[in-house]
Image 1 (tube, rainbow, N blue to C red):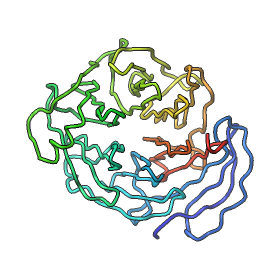
Image 2: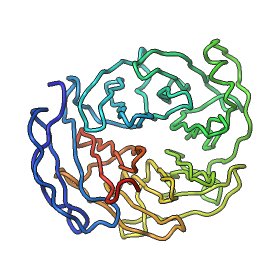
Image 3: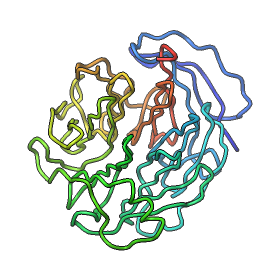
Image 4: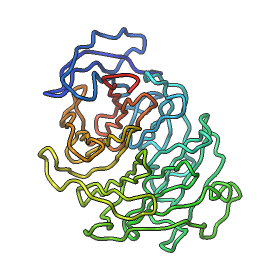
Length: 334
């Protein structure tokens, strides 16, 4: 099978009505019902358990390129590319997986796909066709080296932010020049702009720093997973505020694994533990909770990562359901 199909329409309990499924890629789309969600009008899914092109084994991260093509990495150690409507295009394999599988995707300002390999302590730059053009990082706790990097984002000024967990529990900021150094295969510590964070429970400390999201004002949001909260920092790494605490009620979080911020400042949180998406207003107020644990379209099973496209649609790596779900915004363009 080389692509997804769209199956039945079903309600997402108390949140949104949906359209989705897996099967024949030429199957027609069903009727889409209206929803009560403030943010999303429907959801489409693609994938399913398997190793064939277009299928997944626990998808972990997702990213959209400049043309809204979708890239997904899963436990097979490969990256797959899809069209915005979920049709398989191509794939490539990470060459080394004995130590562990890749986790964490990003996009650089040249349009290359960033792939983080935590157990190899490095960041890779691939063209959209899968050609490796740069690779940087080495193991260590000193500045300029990495311990289990989890996520990478690039700012408009070219700096790369990398989150790390276990021994370091920090955010490191690397200059854009590290990509060129990586292309030259430098093995020493890389130059850094700044570093912040340490293991702990206090403001500015982390317990498994996971995904990151950049706000339109430069705010850096970090999914502080095992502290069951988000933390926000200014562009210099100064603590601004935290949001959430352990629990399953609206306004609480359980193992947030990823976070994204749209151009209006709306914050989307991927909760691994609660199997749902929490949506916050730009001022931090709770907008809504989307989804619940389950396998129906619009429900989630331990989602790992999320991504926004240029229209504000949200893609979710629905790991234990072995699929990707696309939540379409209610108003387009937003």
